Image: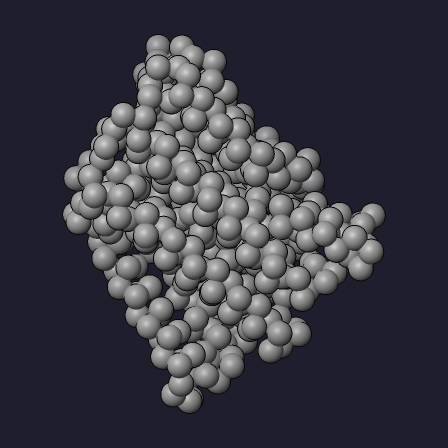
Length: 421
């Protein structure tokens, strides 16, 4: 319980920090400005490394899989509204685990917390893999010896980036990192613009036709699309931090429209540029001798370094809360944080498959956190499961599809990973 309170404090720091409608701007006086600033913050929490993998997702499923991207966007927007309804039903709800607790008691809280923390852990691990892949693409000759062990290529950069990130994990005040990571919206625009420039003016072109549909790749495509919409655990804090909570639906709509346009644009542009040869991160396809390519790659590299500490802090808080009575010291806190970073490095070195790992996260964790759990919690909290109507049947269908996607997508991702080992 104490760990959940600390997680709530963490999200209260890193998300509402940017709301001008909570500071100088009064929402009642400047509704457009307040709505825009809040929507920008919401979009920041939704956009992320998923933008790099959507061309690969489109290549996996074919052109028709774009319909799945739009379907997932609509479904996750709807489940975001269900989270709002859950919170309106009980004013004491302040966080996502609170919703699980209100719906299913202590077991619900534990399930929600586990899903959240495991997702954060694997996304942080994905950051290290992303950094290693892109840095080795820029500097392919990099290697060194570590205690008699030769470390080269991608692995060397994973270790180096982890060493750079480690001091940020030791910080107690993450305000600076919060502001840096909030540049995610701008970073997404820069990346899309840079890649579009590469295709239009740097000789790559948009000549690839691609496939209409690739049935064998549909599970991977769905999983990666789902990974793009995995910000639901943050929505409760976003909602409680707003001065005018009735604007939440508008904020959510603006956020999802912007993100979906950005994701679909990147997917189409990337697929037209590289076709079936597109990598799990489109930046790996870019010619590194072009300035526009370097802008895209460098922009890609900055955000994960800033966001890593923000991602793992809730995990650290949960762990520390369990041992708070016995080891409430700064040294113990630093030890926990260091061990956590080392563990993500080991996982990144053992499973350096960004696309497959993010597909696993999308299928098993993102679908669960963003689709299945909001529906189940709403049905229980609202009591809609007791009456047979359009709403309960529709939500039940979403739950069924979510579970189906989770099972098939998780199995496919695990098979893909096992083949690479």
